Amino acid sequence: MIGPLCVITDAESPLALFDQAEAAARGGAALVQLRHKTLDDAAFAELAREILGRNTTLGARLVINDRVAVARAVAAHGLHIGQGDGDPRAVRALIGPDMLLGLSVEAPEQLGAVPQTTVDYLGVGPIHATATKPDHAPPMGFAGLAAIVAATPLPCLAIGGLGMADIPALRASGAAGLAVVSAVARALDPQSAARALVDAWRRA
Image 1: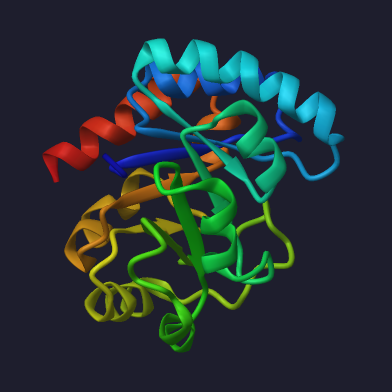
Image 2: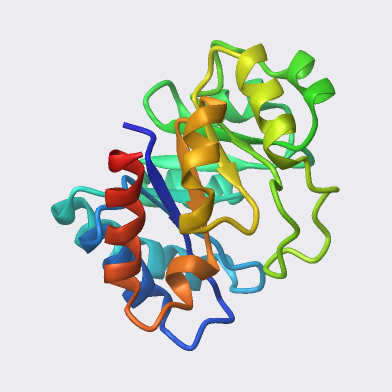
């Protein structure tokens, strides 16, 4: 299952990454994406192994952000790459057929280069401006999201400044779910925040 909730870890949160990941899993997140831009590969892999062992028992799949070598080394459930992280076909050849592969899409014109049988899901956005990624592409809004969802058979996880109030519009767009950072990683009670998002999605 791809959705309805993917929680992306936040290296700037006061809560440790391991604790963020566990809280997300306990709150019902289907995917937890481990992201840390500056940690070296060895330390990143060690952390990933710890999270993988814990979250697997809690029913959440661990997705590694960007780092192909780490995803392979720890046998993660998935890998998520951006538009500048290489040809998805070449990445798929490296990770094998069984690992989930997600790809970020920031504009409808990028869909033409997406190999439909190679990628498992798309991370679509940003929907809104977000402080957790200052160099993000221009926000596309719900209309942009709906246009991308309508143009691809792949499940789409919306991302970018999203929270509880956005869920009805996300559901209406046809998205498979949402990916969040601050809404869980910086919440006072991350587990409850994740659970509330999952419950709200199911009610919408």
